[in-house]
Length: 130
Image 1 (tube, helix red, strand yellow):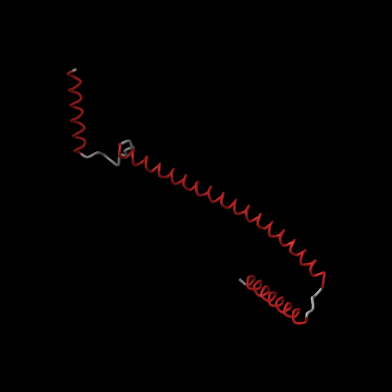
Image 2: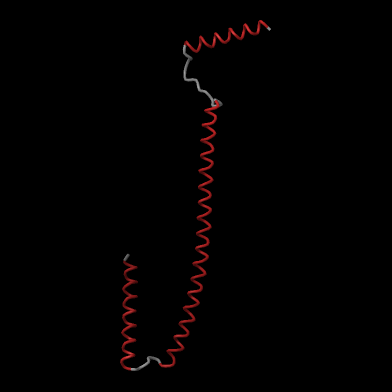
């Protein structure tokens, strides 16, 4: 914050001093450095235009790289979400279809044991008839 404020103050004082210097030249009718000033102005203008062009090129390349990386990141996130949702969907469908693995948490209840025995006797009777 202090650095930014320092740059602001220096820039502000520079603008004020240039305005004051221009006012002084107009008031006195004097041109500081005469013909050399026009050459210096042209030199500064050419240099600043080169600097602006190179800065624009750098900015354009940086922006292009940032956009490319952002799109790649976005698609990577979408891919990971899709994979996650597919896994969840497969688990839900397996649960609905009954393909999931059943884990025994102890002995079966007496009712289920009776049903199992009854089914076994029906199978045994069916095998005997054939």
